[in-house]
Image (tube, rainbow, N blue to C red; front, side, top):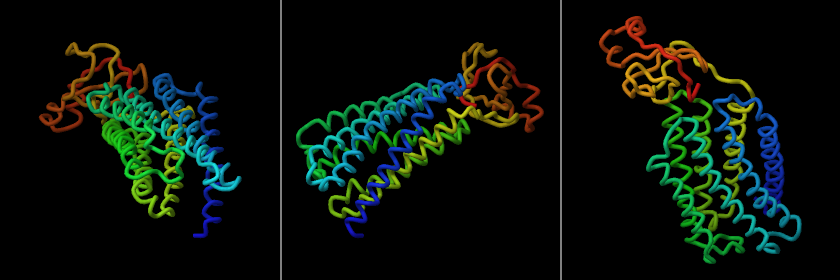
Length: 303
């Protein structure tokens, strides 16, 4: 591909991306009032995550567009390097904030694995500070360009695993789609990290990678900010630990036990029926399970 054509594609894509991501951020901000009360904490974290992403990318791709229009990257290495550092910092914090959004959405503790991902983010911020990073170089230094990105890979892929696990249990399709988009972004990003210094054309994979982030913004916006709240049908089955009770269960616990399943659910303030899994296996039919179910007020974490 001719270099002029490659630069032209990159510039137009970069400009389009910045316009779209900031429009989406603005819409999230303007439509905060549409967010359901149970989703406000998650929506706030998603909004700030994309503010961070947009700011970092404005520095990164904005500086590249400016350089292309004014003599090329080699003429503005300091500016482009500062932009690259900016996006490296903000994308690291983006994953830390998104990890906290996962924690809130599924009413989870961070646990050892969540804290590991947080510490990995802090470690990456530290790795980007030494002069060996050569941020004013157009081509990242090897192998340091790989070393400083290993924590980011752990962050992103670890978050994707948590989202796959918990969105599957909670039948949470939007955030399962988010997990898929994170995997797509890394499938494009890893070859760039490893081989783009040798094969520069691989840098074009950053376009589908960036599209995956845009997809996350659209998915999160539609799931949280549009006022179209998902209602769970009666008879649907979700894993019990993801339903947090307002009042104690008859067993005296504040949460549904791990050996129970929700077999009927409504919206906030309605009732939920809970039956022991052992009853399900023993009785053998749904009617028997419903007959032995316990009923109490509830407020679902994920609906």
